[in-house]
Image (tube, rainbow, N blue to C red; front, side, top):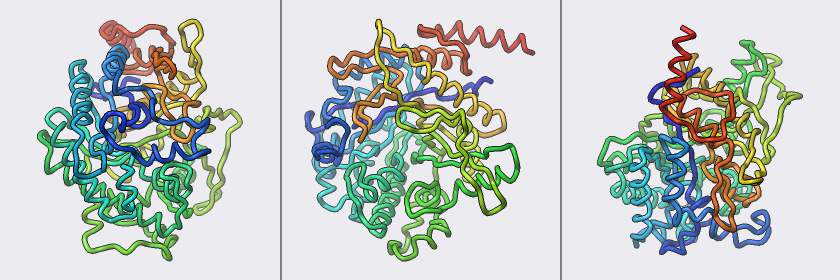
Length: 472
């Protein structure tokens, strides 16, 4: 099944995971620099100090993107690279890097999609309370204004925050991610509320300062239940469960999403968190709920559900279910149901801003055979195509990730990239999945074979057109 003609085919990275330390180039430290230094926090004692050295090698990386045929590249700005203390003093070298990256992308016909915050919160602002400080919303809005004024003559695609469910849930409640806090629920909910205010003020800043009409969203980590059977009761139960707040955690689709898109906290969450709710000031929810242009969804896996009745269900683990190196289950149907459920609920077009598979890839004879990753993307994209065929307005797909990179608390052991990175030499080796994805992009459709070379885009499109005429 072909995808829409104007569909955005891309890949994604984030600043801290690929760039190398901001403080080495005039920037400041982030909470992840602080976290890395603490013994036992990151696997093998790894740090993001070097990562993929993308700041020095971005031109080569953009050339690789062009070889693959990417039409779009989603990357994030490092807040402390631009503002070493988070506010005030500007690091012009940091802004110049993003200026040059955007220009390099556009020279190759690749559209930049910018995320303003992907977890690397400035250390100096953390010392002033971080997301617990209500001023954090204004800090973030001021940073947004600076970046937008610099880049918006060429950038129109903007996301404010990446996965607040994760950096609040794992960073401030569980403590397994930076800044490594294990706060009470009351404090974590307060941090969450302030990050929502930051989102709202950031959207206002984008719209106020953009030099070209912007398209704006915030990236959600999608936790979706998948109906185990093609049965109306399973489907309706999965839909309700996907937007319920059932546990005292942030791993749900509603607590940090409903205020952005509907201007209210969900009723079941208000009941569950009743004893720990932050005090809302007049106008808070109006500030948070700014008009958005699309739903940015990070989708990796779902939970199969079989309904007992209208109120109860069982989780089902299928016998044939495989798992990635992260231990995450491979559940292709989530790429049908997540876009469908989100689009139905919020009435906005969907862009899958992350989807990928972790493995422990190695280079053998100059090649990386990652057939399992190709199989993953093929199966997930087929389900995404099915959602489109059924009328869901889906506008793009970004593979996670372009490069192997620093995988947060997992360090460098887990590899998501379509391009292998030898961290000692920084040598890049396109994996078989990069070649396969190149042919998918050229065909604008899921291909079944596993070619070991980059596509001739024109030839691939002609072949697809001929096949379509033959079917007709």
